Image (spheres, rainbow over the protein chains, first blue to last red):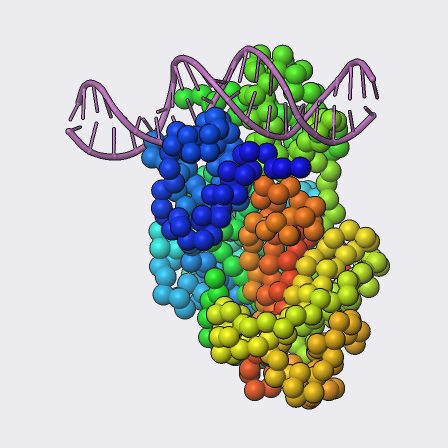
Length: 260
Length: 260
DNA sequence: AACGATTTGTTCGTATGTATC
DNA sequence: TGATACATACGAACAAATCGT
């Protein structure tokens, strides 16, 4: 009937945090002290703390102690925008500029690959057909923000969009570049949003605990040309605890403030 | 230099799962068997399994064993739609109908509350002003799908939209009802998407482990009238492991298939 | 730079409770 | 009811990270 002891301890600590008795950033008592206070073993206290860490309430630092997590100011990205832009770094630049933060995108890592079944389906290409992938790490204010990989059918390069296979940032934005170089016009795009645990690379890049506690948000953007055919796929991955997303439909007043 | 043993064990099990040596739904060896295989203590084996659980790879069932998680077919909800509709149950009905699943919404729980600072700001009302809240549990095919709470300023009821305070489903959709009853026209809406750990109520409703392993997705939809003023806020919460969301901008071909 | 004190991280062994078959 | 398997709890020891002296 009664909860296990480690849950009771966790609940008591949670209550103290919610009630403000333990402020953000404050240090909890040490495991030895809590062990005495609750008259439990150190392992049981540790189980309670582990529960709170998976719930995102506290974090432990070896050699220092356990601390109530700081409140993070989320970064908001608007997914809806100009149907003819925004497939690559455009939204990135606009959003970052608007909020006066300092952006930084790494030099693209360009690879030539064969499309797997999933990628081929999303680009409506044949499985095994050749694609160009451009991978970038993106930061804001020096902290990791997102990992981005864009895929383009190699045919676009053969038709003249040769800069796609150069390891340079396409400053004007890839959508504009494709329009100017080979006349592809983007008339729309579709984003799919999904939440999943991070893989090892993502955990390291975002500085997340590698125990899958914090999720990442994956947004896949498929861009369509005038014929309704997809010509690029951009996959962006964000840390779920620092990012929010907005979707505006119809007429929406500007300057909606951020919510907690 | 080397990883702790429980991580090595977890890594070995993960590799087996990824490689398909352990199929979806397959039962792992018992903790005692794994203890012998890896020459470790049972507690260490349990630490390894715990790591895989938080990563969403396996689940344990008392008295039965540990199993590789089944692949879940995600349910996709499109956030972009008609600017003049979709604030309440409309999208719900449309989406569910289109995919031939069986929807079921509970009778609304209607409450009269005072707006807190956050809610007041989102509705651009005064803090402490009175609002109507309508809360519903929504299922698909009999399984829990989302928790939904809509907030309306009480002034709308006083102006004649009296059905807002009746504990009946508004079959025609609240947006249409507000238009017909008191002439409020929705010209747009804004969704904000955020990921967070579930609270106790959400964990129980979605059947999630109550240790915060699986996140929930919270979508707050603010609806705006012709004057650009917000007149309703709908908060929907989904389980992050079974749901994805789509955003269409511009001209996008229909019938994009679901991705894994 | 070195050292000791403090604090969390890992690993073991053991015992008992609870859920399932 | 008994057997099996996971859940909880205790105690102990050593390792590793951090900090102040």
